[in-house]
Amino acid sequence: ISLEALMKINYGLYVISSKSGDEINGLIANAITQTSAEPPTIAVCINKDHLTHEFIKDSAVLSISILAEETPMKFIGRFGFRKGREINKFEGLDYKYGVTGAPILLEHTVATIECEVIDSVVVETHTLFISKIVNSEMINDKTPMTYDYYYQVLKGKSPKSAPTYLNSK
Ligand code: FMN
Image (tube, rainbow, N blue to C red; front, side):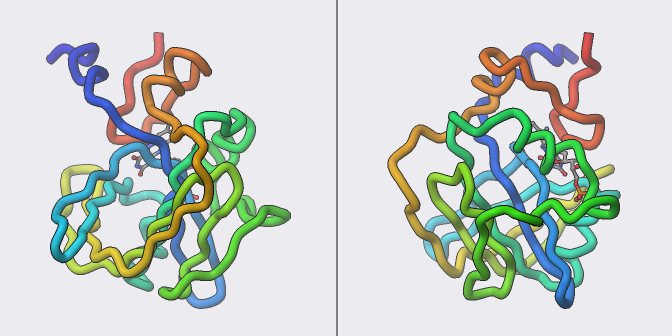
């Protein structure tokens, strides 16, 4: 298998958030895709070990913040490398609660989507949460971040738990 070939698949970069009772958490994900238009659905691929996975299973709701290209690496590090079991990632940040009750992160965000999970498929290490879109909003007209920009321009990396993890050289 050529991992280089797989890296030619285009993605964006997102914060996926969810809740469990009064607790909230979120993580960076690239592995999301719209799966139907009417009704609008979206599939989100989350590692089974992540706290966010536990929260999505508990509440069956999630939100998506589509990150802007100008998102700082420090911010991506907080949501994409730190664990919600160790820190409160939302502390001091700009967010709101949406119609599902899930938090929606507003910083560095060009648009938001809120979902209710309607189905899930376990794929080896990850769960694909297939979700109905219940609300979405434009925040601004900034350029959305792409995975390619994150890799090529920001020289970013992915942790082992990302579905598109590459053994870093
Ligand atoms: N984790 C996933 O489960 N799915 C993804 O699609 C995914 N993509 C990532 C892409 C990038 C660029 C980065 C930096 C991380 C990605 N991750 C992905 C990993 C999680 O964001 C990371 O493990 C996070 O710390 C998990 O947080 P939690 O344990 O608080 O839920």
